[in-house]
Image (tube, rainbow, N blue to C red; front, side):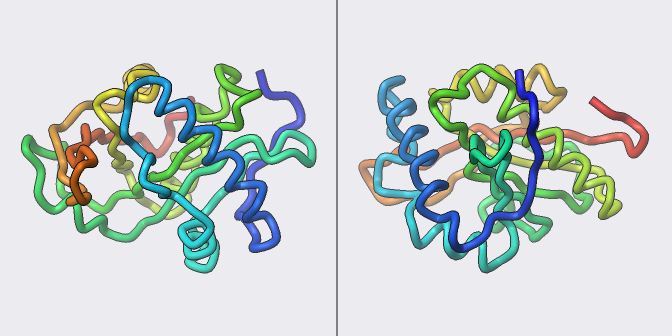
Amino acid sequence: MLNNYHIKKAQLNEIDKINIIYDDAKKLLKASGSDQWQSGYPNHTTIKDDILNDCLYILLDGEEIIGVAYINNKEEKTYLEIDGSWLNDEPYLVIHRIATRKDHYQKGVARTLLTYAEEIARAQGINNIRLDTHKLNISMQSLLSKLGYQYCGIVDLNLPKPFESKRFAYQKVINKNEHI
């Protein structure tokens, strides 16, 4: 598990280190047969934009960046239409682009970032978190289930062909006093 970890907002001088984590994730996804993130996304520009928009968080173990997640409280346009239904129509945080450095797989990095997102939501008075994942990202689906996220249906990210555009959508309603 994680020892000396802390979470902070990413800075522009950390882009290259964050990109290595996304490259690790791209390789893992490809090895699982998924086409998720196989189009060059996320990339340097994505990371820079996320940092400039004040939405990119990094998990550090000591001084080493071992995880990254985009966390934002702005409405996600691709979530306006869902084949299924969201649990409610209340404000929500959205999580995207969560990834772990390859030598820290299965050590609680994603769980820690998801838990931190809940803390952000509570601090902002938001009781919902939404995210989506590729149908072949079984490890993320399993983690979301363990953390109390509910499958709500399918959203379409409108990706160009030949990439799979449909994603499994999840939501968690969090209790203000609940702590994982």
